[in-house]
Amino acid sequence: MTQYAILLYAPAPADVADMPAEEIEAHGRHADVVEELGGHIVSGHALQASTTATSVRGDTVTDGPFIEAKEVIAGFYILEARDLDHALEITKRNPATWRGGVEIRPLLG
Amino acid sequence: MTDAGTAGVHQAVADAYRDHWALVLAATARLTRDLDLAEECVQEAYTQALAGWDSDGIPHNPAAWLVTTARRRAVDAIRRQQVLRAKLPLLAMPDQTDGGVEDLDDDIPDDRLRLVFTCCHPALAPDARVALTLRLVCGIGTGDIARAFLVSEATMAARLTRAKKKIAAARIPFRVPAAKDLSERLDAVLSVVHLLFTTGHTAPSGDQLLRADLVERAVHLCRTLHALMPDEPEVTGLLALMLVTDARRATRTDAQGRLLRLAEQDRTRWDQAAIAEGRDLVLRSMRVGRPGRYRLQAAIAALHAEAPRYDDTDWPQILTLYDALRRVWPSPVVELNRAVAVSMATDPGTALLEVTALERDPRLARYHYLPAIKADLLYRLGRFDEAAAAYRAALELTDNAAERDYLAGRLADLS
Image 1 (spheres, chains in turn cyan, yellow):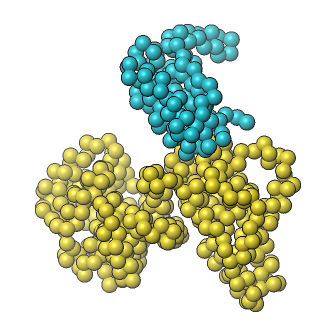
Image 2 (cartoon, rainbow over the protein chains, first blue to last red):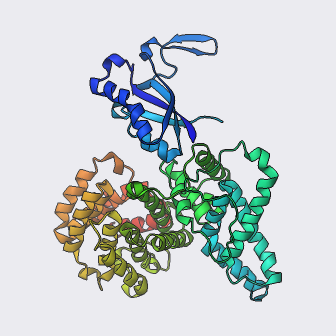
Image 3 (cartoon, each protein chain N blue to C red):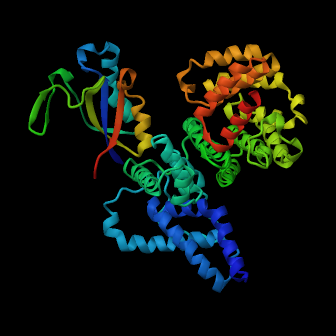
């Protein structure tokens, strides 16, 4: 099994208050979907809105996400899957793909 | 073993390179689970064949000899690097049986499809898919690939390295996709093969209209895919499309290298055997399900090729096929080609209206065939000044010398 970081992106500021009820509900069910498909979530976290983020570049501290964009990270989890095709099959079922998108990054080591 | 002399050995190694490279590499990659190492060992096996076959004779099964030799080298290399390799990500091999070297002799596992699907995985950038396919499936050298795509060898080498690293790190599997994903993934494979063909057929720039080598590689690759997947009608369709299109190779330019239009080409010099084979493939593929883009394009190309004279072309039938094509493959380029069929099946005025509407599509803004087709339509309508302006617009958009000469010639005829 390979471990992947699954980075969930949503329209800024990715405030859970803006998330449709059905999407919240689907996120709640997603761990079961992952297990049904033979994958495993090692750990996962949802984040507060990007308006609460603070960034540091060099020694400069700024308010807001590190990169200003239309979509920002809304959460992440660590997924165990057999290979990229398996990770893709699982990730296509992630409700974050409905309004935003998902990036799959293999963990180092 | 046969004794063939040095020239014979060189020929045998060259033949084995062309015919068996993919098979040997795929079989070696199954063992090494590392594309770089596999590539290196296969290259060494071919080098060893040059000397070995000269002294020992050409083996009766060159592919099996090459696989055995490449795999032996791989086993040695893996033993030497065991400690280091434990830390490296390896190719994901989902239904791997065992890691050992089986007795190969005449029975080589055919992993070419796995190799092709790995190289054409949608998680790789499109230009990387093309480069990997040429390097790993066709065995073409990095320098030659770089020249075909007009980038420096260093750029192409970096592109290949990056792609191979991603395959290992992200664990893109060495596997033929499951049936439910096959058609989508096959699309990605076929578009790589088609791109190789079109890049060779009309080189995007440079002096020669055609890079015969790329065309032949693409046809050879598609024949291999067709042999491995005889029941995939779109593979059959793409092979037919390439055969019928390439059948006109000898007549596409005149003795001076000037581009000739379909109407001007000497049809008696078209490769009738290739046309017959292509037509036969189209007819067979059309019996299965709803035809996709390659089958429809092949059917259109076959109708052109079948007409004894340009005036005998069955334009109404071609227009019907374009109507089907635009449904399965909505694309402004299809609309533009369909407009040409409209001009022949209906009238140039109707076609001109459609081409004028397409001018607003930003995807065609740099597409030189649009003003070239518009110019031809204006010419046929007797609007010569506007035609000349359109030919000039087309000239500004193309870098291919043969196409530039053609357009300049048309423009000269008008003044």
